[in-house]
Image 1 (cartoon, rainbow, N blue to C red):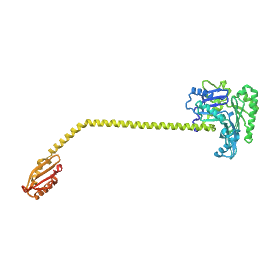
Image 2: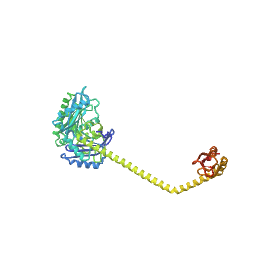
Image 3: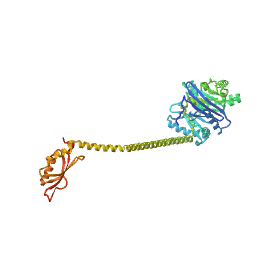
Image 4: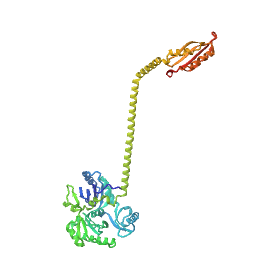
Length: 484
């Protein structure tokens, strides 16, 4: 899953523990932490009644599209530091998958696990921090969050936030000196051993601020003994590695408790309170607020400091699959809406264009019909003008035709008529000749004249029985303007 949360941008951190609900709208940058909103409330038992509480808080905050990171208290998870005889990521994943079910009394179907690489102490080996959680624990919290309208991008554990906070604290990280980190929360304490910024050991101690407030002396002794035992277990798991040279504490750990632990462990004990980095507080809280001494905000603030560098993600597969189905359904819905919009737009465009073209055609047709009388009048005027030009053209006038025809008529040819068609520029000669040769001579004379062309006899030349002469009809066209 692609993380939208980035350092320097607002992020909503939510932690649902066994008795405490923590919600932070926070932005962490190099200049400090801006805590825009904070909600912390206590509940007696975990139930679905938390959903309305969370929903009410979100409604008042109006966070919009702010990325959500969920945090699981360390006391609800099992964490093991394992050394794998490989440096290949694929082989390490297979080994972790094999080891996960062996580290808990639960079956593989009842747990969900993830891990982060923790460097290497020797060549060819890789240390990993394996986190195992019961699926029922995760299902309860995801159900509550989803009922409240939240969809966390990642579910990690408080130890990862504490590790980020320890890295931000600086110290001897670059030197690789082991450092013990203790974060005292309300009902438990998160203990880690960090070497060079790498977690080499993690343990949850069931001593918190509530027990320290109820029975201080007994709680202090128990916390001291548990820290000593944790240090022994850390040395055993890390092949008798060096003992941490200092202890950094955060959360609900007052000065007198730090002095007691420093004396009992014989190591320097210093406070690394992430609250000192908060530059802006919400109106209802301040750093001196006594309520902040009942729990720890170190882990949530550590998660906000580097949300894009977290490695543990405990989102159940069923949640991932459901979100993926919802995402695909939304994509298909969006695509369908887009496709319908395109089709409607194309249809609307085609309809509008059709009606515009139809309106334009009707307008042209109306204009054409309105201009028809004028067009016919102009056509008649053109015909009259054409006839007038033909009559005015002396090259094809009747007088010239007569003048040109007369010399071409043989002596024994008598014309009965000479029909002149000025529009078609045609002449039809009808008459009689003494012999066939006279008629042929007339045709040859007309063909040889420049004024006439396409000369031909129409019908057959016949002899008149009464007069003994040959009757003929000869048609020809006038050369018109081509003749000078």
